[in-house]
Image 1 (cartoon, rainbow, N blue to C red):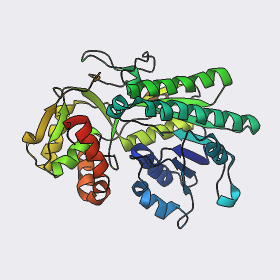
Image 2: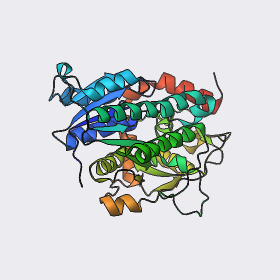
Image 3: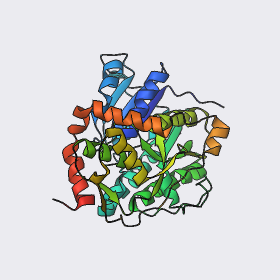
Image 4: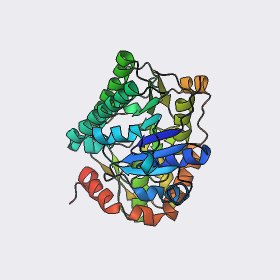
Length: 359
């Protein structure tokens, strides 16, 4: 049975994946309304949605609304779920939960914020939704957007993660996401709550905060700064273009089975050093910029996603090749310097603290 939401609440919608999902959704469904609920922490940037606000905000077709708020604020979440006609807010019948602290290195330095946002925030949303649906039942979907990191690590010859792979998180970040996933699962089992869990591989594309590998390396290479690369650089990741992630999420929202888990991956495994070399070639920069740094504590060696289920059951497939997707991403950062230059102070401070051990 298909589900067609009329109003989607996206938590963390000013972040990288959230902003790209909102942009894609509003351009592909001409009737849906989107509420972006975001606390605007360091990685949230309303400028990432300036074009969306112009086209779909108060001066546009009025299908997009931004609300600043914290997922741990039960009162704020409840008010949104109930709608507000005077503010032009409909009642959401779908929540896409992306709000999260997401950087592994920061979780090692300060785990408590990750537990607060990723676990307690998810619990707050679940409780608010459960209370609202109990009060006024209606067709509803709650999409828990999670990560392949909850599965732990793979050796180079291991088969890819499936939805049946046991959870074995190795960082405070992945542990907090696994805890949130398990809370969502428990609500499905205990309260018959209409939730679905998705687990994606490493995303890349435009509007990504430049502390993550690809935008970090692009922005530093453009400035001829050292490119910090962990360990031997041979850690392997499965790369997923953020637009392919958006289409997968919509497939899950509209056709996914309640209570199920769907892996989402790009089917493109590459070592970190090969990714960095490809970026340097695209920018015509020398490999001498690479600086190998001490490896991250508990650094997972390899992630790989088996996406047979979402492909077979929902008919989804990734459309971006890594070569074309990476080329387009590089071009976006070259052409949008004002966007990323405005957030460089925080990104560079984090880079120095996390990788280069500088001031």
